[in-house]
Image (cartoon, rainbow, N blue to C red):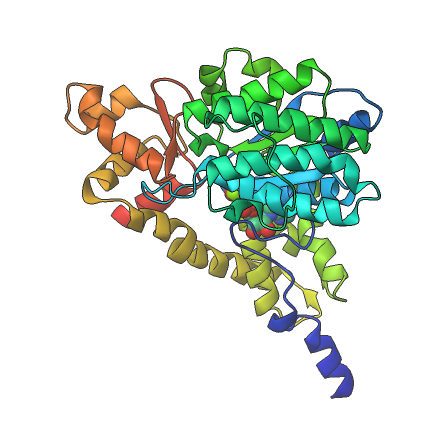
Length: 405
Ligand SMILES: Nc1ncnc2c1ncn2[C@@H]1O[C@H](COP(=O)(O)OP(=O)(O)O)[C@@H](O)[C@H]1O
Ligand SMILES: [Mg+2]
């Protein structure tokens, strides 16, 4: 009995290592070494005074952009960089936490930390003064400059224009950070939700600091429509950013994502069981976590066998239908659901917007334009290019077909 209970504990649901959920750090961040390396290259080059392009990660929802972004942020923090991390997602129409305020809040935290641990805090003085002036211009109560005990630098980053102020702020922060042998990173998740003027301001700041080889870098993450949005905001955006598509994991990386977390818990997977989960998820990280988690919970353990994986995939699919897909479907109004159903005829898509309008019995695309715009705003759809429309999550069309029939 003693031994038996030990082996059972290996796949105890309490010990389940898998982490299906938006932004939940996976037990093993598999298959992203090339992306991590190119980020490390930015940090390493900055340390020797060389500049690099900023980075933009693009991909569908659930592919692992947010967790990768957090991993990169941690790496920069470990090297004592000034790191601001914001999520540009605005629920409904309220933008009470403006982009500018989010940047200030996040920088406030990072600057306090860096100042506290720096061996030469006086080298940060002018950066802190400019930050204070940026913050107070954003929120005169001073709530966005807590613990920054310096006088604001008059005439720096305080015009109220995001474009002018962000550039001056980036310039002064990066100058001080460079003096300390580090730099400044602004990480922006859901970047496709920023307004055009905000994207333009970011481009200007990256451009101006880059021209002077100052270590200010932006790492953005967003839907595949983000590169086009950046190009529309500033024609030279293409030169500022290295665009890195974040896709499904290769079969080998997917297998590692599944097996390694078990190994570190004293459990294991049979090879056929791994293959069932990897094939069912098609390398898509969110689904891998969901299926691996369910398989673990079904396995009497300590080895997860083929049958456990089969049941796990089935149970995982039901969970996705009841949550991941269902929550998106529930967000859509009746007219929006008609639009989504018309798209589902094209499978994974993308669909031509003209063709969708025709299927809905409209003679002009503009008649369904507002519906399409709302679905984009709700995060269910994105426009891969002009005249095309696609789902932001893989498998949505199959889910819709299952609902209708
Ligand atoms: N490289 C990876 N290896 C294993 N699991 C991953 C990986 N990247 C993401 N995941 C898992 O996938 C899910 C979605 O990740 P997330 O970063 O929220 O995706 P996105 O931001 O692209 O929508 C989470 O459950 C996460 O744990
Ligand atoms: Mg995300």
